[in-house]
Image (tube, rainbow, N blue to C red; front, side, top):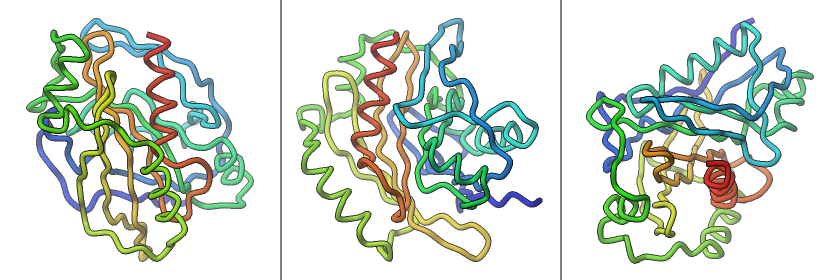
Length: 239
């Protein structure tokens, strides 16, 4: 069975942690024959380890050949931006796809260990200093979660919302991360769909990471900003 995937329409050869690129908005995967995998894991880059666990309600793919092939597809697509440390989808959607009740996901999350000039490089600066440097003149802009949640709910209700090929919007900072929103158009076969993501960029164990929650207009559940914040908090608490 052919497994169609949403993929990026353009490419970028190098990603800096100060230039979060459109290449992180990648790959909505349509799956079949899925089973749940273990969620908690430890990944190691540059001799530094990070303990990861998807946010509540999300499950990783399993290690079957089909699922590994799909994970590798996602890993290759995100490679210019960083190393794909974790990728997960809603457990309920995973079950529906496995039962052939659905053919693609409306939401997914991932963690990238971000590259700078095409390389993985450790960050020596403390987290707060890194976040403020990354945010630039947005460093003193607080994150307004309630406003973003209202905007997200309005957006999700408009399933025919048009989105340009790519747009990037700084949202604000907390003491732990710089938050941004990204939007693009993704295509699978002849079907084109708007895709948006909320990203939180921070440092964990001297590794620059991006924590992402993606969604389409058909996504159900909590707003992406809430998912990203929960994912980020879980990672910080575990490390």
